Amino acid sequence: MIEPHAPAPPGAPPPRRGHGGQAPLPVRTGTGRFLVLACVFVCAACGLVYELELVALASYLTGDSVTQASVVVSVMVFAMGIGSLAAKRLRRLAAAGFGAIEAALALTGGCSAMAVYAVFAWTGDWGGLWTDGPRHLLVAFSLAIGLLIGAEVPLLMELIQRIRRQDAGGAVADLFAADYVGALVGGLAFPFLLLPWLGQLSSAVLTGAVNAVAGGALVLGLFRGDLSRRGRWLLLLANAVVLGLLATAAVLVHDFERAARQALYGKDVRVALHTGVQEVVLTGGTHGHPLDLFLDGRLRFSGRDERRYHEALVHPAMNGPHARVLVLGGGEGLTAREVLGHPGVRRVDVVEPDAGVVRLARTDSALSSLNDHAYDDPRVRVLTADAFAWLRQAHPAAYDVVIADLPDPGITASTKLYSQEFYGLARKVLAPGGRLVVHAGPVASRPRVFWTVDATVRAAGLHTTPYCVDGRAPSFAAGPDRTSGVSRGPRDWGFVLASASATAQRSAPASTTAPGLLSPTGRFTAAALTAAERRADATRIEGLPPSTLVHPRYGD
Image (cartoon, rainbow, N blue to C red; front, side, top):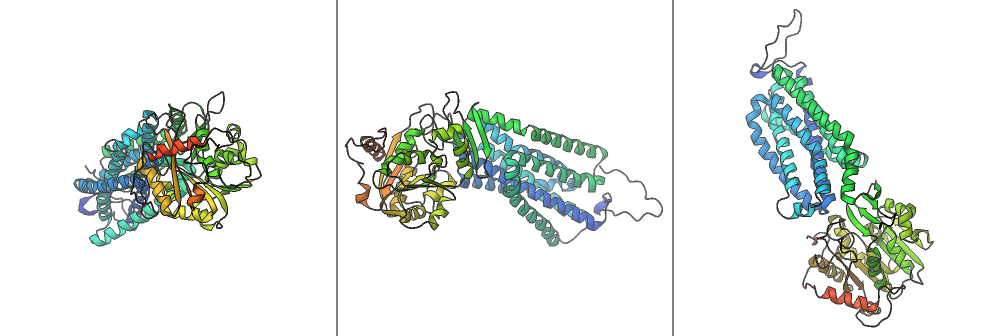
């Protein structure tokens, strides 16, 4: 209901009245149009930040960024269409409707990241929530945010026409130009400013606050005459409540992260940091508790069983010439530790994309003790680089052994490191008779992924020997890239040993029952490798196509 306005005082300029008998605007027409388009710009930037927040958080929690991006974007775009249709009924109350929608969007989008992370941390059942049935939480937030964003467009169109009538094509062009430019700014601000400076949770909260201020200021400042006194107070109160809740979340976000981290990793967290590449968390390592390293929420290794994993990864490939060794990944230094245990090693090059992990491996007392201070050895050289890009520039035939200690192939970010092109580059740097070994993920729970790795290595022109070994920690999901305490997770590790020459491939005592040692300590013997080969072969899947950069094939 529109309130009556007092007559203008003598000598005052005539009021700028809206169309259809609506209340006059407090500013000139050009200024009013600029303010509406500025609000469109800000709201579009905020909307895209919400979308990217959900994609990033879901990818961080589950690893499959392609699937998460597809679900979030498709559901959100669908919901935007529904929201636009629904908002047609609010056009007569465009100002009040827009103000209410922005307050709801600010609260929903600003709190979405915290809600998703809270469910992941405290339920301990993200896998079931995400994979067994509808993706309830992400779909719900994507749907709600999409509906609210979609409802903005017809209301903003009504408001901009409310200031000055123009042809529909011109109004749409102005509105969409501001919208798309705002989306560009939001899309660039999220990865380059918000995420590195504030992190996922704080950036979502800040974005919600900006959204609430922009929407509330436009309606209460420019279109306040379209609202009754009661409507203005209700909208003011709603925005105050939203901003108060977001401010409370911003104050408590660090305590929330700490509590969620303890719920996720246990109370033994010693180190938690963002390196600029990933989140790194160290737990244990003191008072008799085993040391665990988590990268982006996934257990990279556990002190309960890491030696079993690294022995199985390294020692089969070291049976043969091994003076020059290349380690791809393995920044925590445990692979280098096993390599240095072999006599005759002259050089070990470690290519690790995250300098923060290497720094931690050098300086953390528990981790450096576990890796036997491998980085203090003058034979070890660390190269901070992406493994794929570095191999493209590497000298041919430069290494006797290449060890790919990389994240699980089921993680989308790692797909290119398990491609035919990647193994072709690795083959190029192998000396004649050299050997490549690849961590290929769990076998029993994901045999198709494991045998796809084997098919991909063979497609690069290498002869392969797949093998599989048990983990040692029945209460944990064994192997890297698993979440602590998830008892249903994989409990084995799969590897693929390869060489360009079939003769060189069999120069090690693999596939024999000879009691010769594969490791200097005698913990991983030739007989153990033979049993590991047989165990892997029992799960063999024939005829799988290789994975390439343009056609990745590592879906679970």
